[in-house]
Structures are given as structure tokens and as C-alpha cells.
Image 1 (cartoon, rainbow, N blue to C red):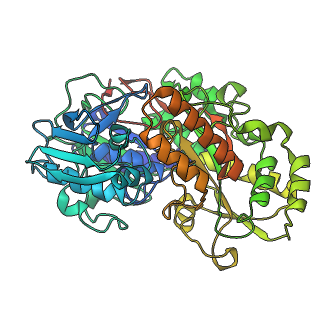
Image 2: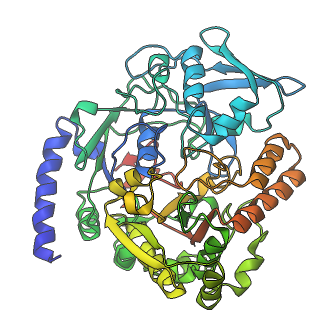
Length: 527
């Protein structure tokens, strides 16, 4: 794209920004561009990261997770646990209101938990252990367990896909497989749904009914004090335009910057590059469709596992070597509490030359492998092409099917054969914050579930997850976590493409920006 074209588009952006912000002063508006476009507004029915950012703007959780992985009361004033750990009593804090001005009640929370548990494996495991979940009064509700479940608090504070957000009971009682028709939350912002233009802009105003907690902000926990009037999520898929808009001040935040532009941005005194480590980092993942040939066969999945070279995948992003790990085979992310090398022995002999004979031994008959390629996603575009190249070199008949991310996200739910619109593999990313607990980790927790694309199923992992759910000692938890990781690699649920930093870039005049795995918009002042 020519520089003149960039300037022309920036002129249009400037004109649009003036119209969109209306009465809001520019110094009270934050304009951000996410890695993927906002398409779906209900965080219960999708795992798309843009919807998660949306969710934390307008909704809130009962429990919040901090930057160090600790869980704290958020909508809750607190909780009590009986001596036998079978009864959990929860009490809402005072002053909670929905964005329409009505009070948040215990019934709302009970129905929201039930809706979430119908769609999410962590919630389903908790409710499978439950005898009943019911309100006691307007502010109190109780969970009675019939069998122990050691991770109730962690389940209610799950930070990512799929997010256990609270909503009014009248919405939570609707079909959990369909997005709710209106957005009513108790979070720090109000979504202006009538002003939403998909593929263009989504507008959020400060929620005057929101009551922050008194503690300092910490990740998704603490006081979500809003110091601006408005957030605008701007759809802008061209990387050059994003960077130019950030440098000109037309954008304030870019969720992920193409690594090619990082040297120039780091040299710009008006731009700050966020730092990430451990669970704040990101994992590239190649999802495998276990339902359809050829990857319904374990040996063919093992050939794919041997073919993927993480360093090649990550270097395609264009970052400097200090931004990624050359090899990380831990499903919990390296440099996190459950990280280990369990089950990784198979990678010592991995490579294209090992993949070729494995594929031949497996009886592969040149079946077409449809790789869904989300070209519009900065973090998926180049890695997907590397996956395709590695698979071709190993002997797979690869058909790269290119489209935008929204189309890929929709198509991945199909269980049809490849020649009828189905798929074989697709690249995705996981935020590290989602991976630190096995019961919320999509690498294993969706085992034998019907709702997570890929549909892997391994009886050994089902049994290990049940044991982990009741484990209370940390040594026992680490042992079971390691066994789950080994089972993941043995069954080849998916293939890990590698761990890396995907830092945000933002204008230096934003103060109080909270470092996290994805952008949050409270605590920020625009100076």
C-alpha cells in the first residue's frame, strides 16, 4: 500500500472519528483496534478473542483473576465454604445495578451460571458435581455439591473462553446456544448497540451505574475505575493503516502490532510497547479435526505432530528471537506453575524426515487436508502458511482455504466431510491466561465435549480430569497436570505451534494501562 493511500485513508478515519465521538471530548475517548473484528456479542456462544474484550467492557464476573493468577471477589462481597467443602454460600456486594438501572439479584447470578455451564466444560464439570444451585434471598445464593469439586472459585472466575459473565435472569434463561438479543451487563461500560456497525465501529460509554470495588485494579480483579467517557473498537484489518493511525493519534491502542513495525514504534517517543511474560503471552496452536479423515487416525495425527517445527512457525511472525521461545511443548505455557516436560520425549526425534515414514506407516492415501487460513488475522496469517508448507513437505495433500477470520470462525463448527464444506486443520491462538488451570485449558478440558471444534476424545484424559477436579494438595495437582499433558501429546489432541509475546502498542499519553493478556480499558487516563 502506498504512503499516499495510507494518508487518504487516515483522512477518512479522522473524519469518521469526529462524527463518531459526538459530544464526547477527544481527550476522554480511547479508540482501539483489535487483532480480530468484533462479530458476535455473546461470550457464552463463542470463543473469539474480540468477544472476550467486549465481554469485559460491558459484563462482570462474580470472581476476578489478578495478574499473578490469584482469584478475588469481584461482584461478590465474599463466600463461605462449609467444613466438608460441599456447601458454598455466596453473597453479592451492595450497590450492584444492571446497565438498565435495575438491581442485580442472586436469581440473576444463578441463571447466568447455569447458562454458562451448558456451554463450557469447566462449568459443566462443576454442575455435574452439584446437587443444586439456588437463591436464598436477593443477595445470597448457595451451591450444594453432591461430590467434592475443588475448583468452584476458579470456575466462577474463569478469565477466558468461554467467560462466565453475569446477565439478567430474563436473558440468561434464553437458549444458551443462541446469542442473547440485547446486551445488559453490570460492567464498567455500556454498549451502544444501536450504533454498532459490524466491520466498522463499536461504541461503549462509561456506565454511570457501575460501582467499582475499593481495591486497586489488578488484571481482571479489583477496582475497575473508569477515567474516560468512551471506548471505540474500530475495525481496521490493514496492518500498515493500523500503525499509521496509531502514530498519527487517530488510534490510541492497537491490540497486537505486526512485528515488522515494532522497531519503528519502539523508536517513537509517542508510543509505548507493552511487555508480557509467562501467562500473559500467547500460544500458536494447530487444531485438528478428529471427526473426519485423515486425522481420525492416531498415527496420521502423530505424523502431523512430527512435521510441525515451532521455531519456523514463530519466526514467520517477524519478531526478534527474544519475543518467542524456540520450543515450548507445555500445554500450560512455559514459565507458569504447571509447566513441565511430561510427554515431550516424542519431540526429540521430530522433524520432516521423521514425519514422512510415520505418514507412510499410517496408511495415508493422499486424502485432501483442508487447512482453514484466516488471512485477516495478524497472528494467524503467516503461521498458517508455515503449517501448510511443513505438512506438504511431510507428504500431506494440503488444500489451503483462505478467507477472513469471521468466515473461518463460522466454518470451524462444521462437522461435515471435507468435500462437503468441512475442514481438517486450522490455526488458532490461545492466551496464556486461559491455560494455567487444566480444568479451563482448551487443550484438555473439552475432552469428549460436543461444543469445541476439533472434537478430540480420550478416556484417559476424562479420568484424569475427574481426579484433578477433587485434588486439594498442590503436589497431587502437579502430578495430575503432568499426566494430562502427557496424555494430550500421546493422543495428539492438537499440535502446539509455540509460545510468544504479542504485545499491545498504545499512545504514551495513556497512563495506568494495565498489563494483561488482552486489553482492558479501566484505570486508564488520557493525558
